[in-house]
Image (tube, one colour):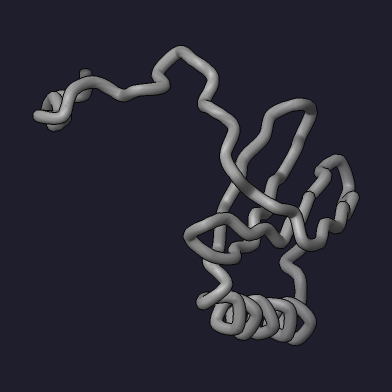
Length: 95
């Protein structure tokens, strides 16, 4: 246990060391992008709580995932567009 971590009054983590039960998610659209040695999977999904975008990065079998609620997609796109613009405008450092 981490020093600042306290046991939950509600008991232990229910799925620790066990597979989670299947969730009720529908995939509405999915796209795969290969960039260098990384594979990104963009999946627009829906569950009883709403729609969301799941972005999964796979590098040599190691996966990391972020989930963005559909209510934040416009803000996410705005920031991503700004980063693309900045990347094109700024010269790359060499050395």
